[in-house]
Image 1 (cartoon, rainbow, N blue to C red):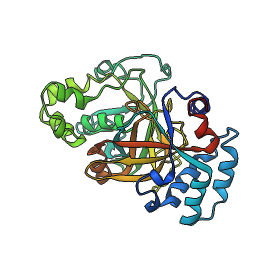
Image 2: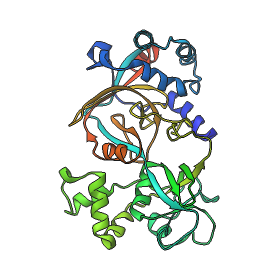
Image 3: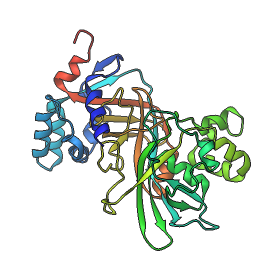
Length: 339
């Protein structure tokens, strides 16, 4: 956690050099129609982690804003300016918290483990790749958190980074991201398209699941082409109604939390999401998470919630639009050339 917070503070001072444009709120489609109070409440959950001088007074005011829509909207319009960083179109995808079936011990049905972080793993240093781990390099070390009944769901749990596991003894355990093996994520969907197994228009999380299950031998080989492997930890202090833990160490909120590339969008920053596509979404969110596949100033992953319905919605998202930061006024104008 200390490493995450240190990285958060360093990022604010070291945004990568990308063209920026300061906008006005009137230019944001549907800005006036959004639930700004919901956006403010998401912002309040992590604002105390932003201890730089220009954020401290804003976070103090955020905690004192009256809990009504007009006050929340005025808070953002008075203290922030929208900043477009980089060149649209953006790429928006979705993620969620799956609910899976599991066992504390291996059985004929529950044969696919998820592991806690090995003690020798070092962040940013390449370790064993996915294929090597799948061949059993960790067998016998007692690192298993649970055994699941579907290798495809194990793979997708790695992509989501968190989940709920309904155990055979009646317990429900929550697991969250604890680290990865140092390899960059490689898109399985892109490989399936490149090899001609499906078209770009057919691509979704559900279509990938279906293809791998229908082609188990080739499917396992394809999955292992993504060398990245994720390790987990048990989350013991979350209530049932709380979302999973994001990169800032706090619970994230459906359709109000978004994963970003912190090299461009500092964690904790309010963002205005203009997602187009079949189900357009123009909404105030907060950059409270990261992801291995989320790279660039105009790239974001929207958190859709928990369970099957959230998974269907998240898995169908691959849309263009704009990602716009809301920055304190002085910080916004300082990003302009000669600012």
